[in-house]
Length: 471
Image (cartoon, rainbow, N blue to C red; front, side, top):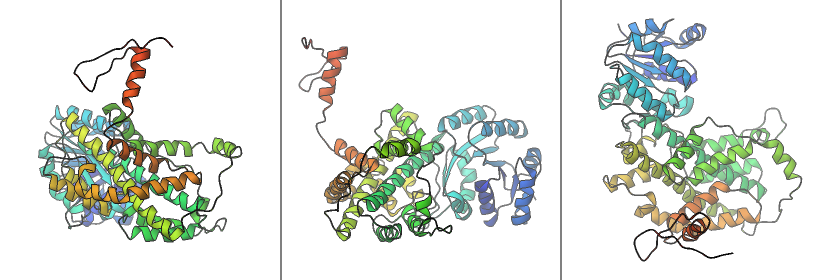
């Protein structure tokens, strides 16, 4: 009996997706460059639905037509190398799926190259980490509508479930649309985590709360509007004791330098190229960059004394302020991501369904949150006339109600020398986008003075230049 799908690459994500497919009744054939790793994997998890082959050629021959091959290898050159190896072995109509964190431009290129050979290419974003891959991820497949018709039933069975028990997968769009949406998902993820980290730092620095008490505060926050996967997992992370007994909680002994794999940076770079403002997400990337300069930070901290003053607002009252401000900041972060998606959709001619994107992020993915159901309903009500989130009545009501708390939180951070760049930039994005008048007119005057860059007027059409006079 032929296999339903072949999976190439058996790192943790590849292994767990293979097990997920097999657990749903699909016959899966796997391959890994290290045969020993594949053998050990099958020895532990293999069954009548899950097996391996020692060569790529054997995997291809084992598959039902049209063949479906899921690549779970490192993004970049490795993906191209495997595609080059596979292409001569495949027939017209066969499908190659790239499930890694590939750059959407690479997916566009690969899609065009393989289309010329009659092979279908699907760049598919996969979110949910190791657990999601095994028990149900959020899936963002791009590619042709024809490939989606073939893959739809399989992907729906292995996907996570949304708030209405629907599968967290939809056809995103052609070319690189799937990987683009996954990239923006990861950018939002960067922003949300930075917002949470800044909330942690305020509680620690301004209120001098022990980490286990911060855990209790985050538990309280996770039970309200902020309820999400990231808030849920923050509780055990902050509560976990250090088994080496060097710190009370393990997180206190984790070095404060955050890593990154590039998707957040790609999101910021792409936003700059498209002329879209993405301050919370880009600031989250910059914050990680600064965190990496540990040695310099340690040196400079000796030269600058931080304030140690008692907060003017009692902790019980502050937690309510923090909840409202964080919720508003997270709405701002999501709004920035969706604004970028809307601009990219027009420029790339992708027919993105924003209600569907919100829906498939309700389950399985890292940024799954109750807020996404609010966004899903907002985009559904828009009925194709996609608004900026700040223009959605329900969102407006929330932002107006939380606006004062947002300002108060920032004031407390400033008063206690706590760095809260993502919280601040999420507010400045909101203030700028909801202001009828910005100081860019002054900037245009400066540009025209030193470079004759010209400007436009408010009272008449045309382009103007002024001789401003001597200094």
